[in-house]
Length: 369
Ligand SMILES: *Cc1c(COP(=O)(O)O)cnc(C)c1O
Image (cartoon, rainbow, N blue to C red):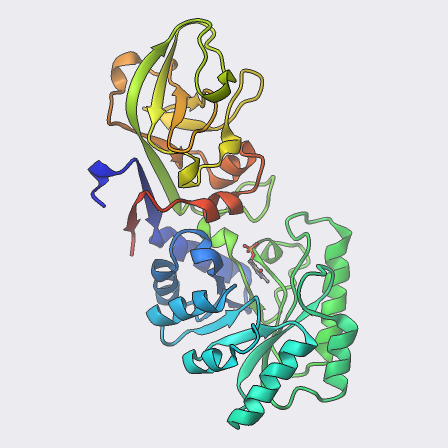
């Protein structure tokens, strides 16, 4: 789409993505640094992210769905690709065809994969997911231990033993030390199998449970792995919205749906051609009592005024000199000091949701490849 026709322009910096991967690799020292590229690489585009990360040196990727794995495979023949959500009934042949690895998280999945391997006469690789506290996916620790004891794994190649941290972003949460201890104990029962526990935040824990492989996602895309501390990651995503109208609201007039914001004094309003249908969450709406989103307009931070609509956002640009903005100009919604963590907080959510909501109507521009 030509930029002149776009209501919003999303710029994705693949050099920053690669730099973030290298920073995480160095942080994790001897461990292999993989990359989590589920949910279309957290919204930035799996077809662009996977080759950029592979070129930086990443060799192992994690997605959530089989379909995401085949998309990653189509752009990267040589990577190791794991599917976190595991084996859906009857899909083992698709894994084998594309050289993909399921993350097996239950007895049933393990039996189905083992049966497929027996029938195929090949010990195909898969990961084994052991739960250490999430109670979402994964074998219970005692189930995993029993499995190892009864030698139930020889039909396939257990290529990775993994678990997932519950509260890695809260460094002092006691559950983390319990999970690490449980996982280290379990790891003893799977000699020779590489082990993996850390997501982005886990890499930065004081206890450094990096083990053999780390699995960052969010931090690769510029999210802060250490909430509350300075963000060591480079921003990857920049979002600009286009001003399609500038107008004045008189003192006492309201702006937007349901009249939730009232002009106090004469206010200048810029209407931007981006809305919640573009994934800019409606929770960023502003009332006079509750601040919402903000944008950088001609170098000035400006607050949203009223509700975020499906296709439009209204911004109070009274703080910007009148002749320094015009119809057609771009304002920054993400970037120029507004990070994805801040946008998430302003929407009452987390930056992960901001990224994975990024819409499909923007002109997308990839730089730094
Ligand atoms: C999403 C996910 C990750 C990556 O987590 P981030 O917090 O984005 O770094 C790692 N492991 C598993 C199992 C996941 O589901």
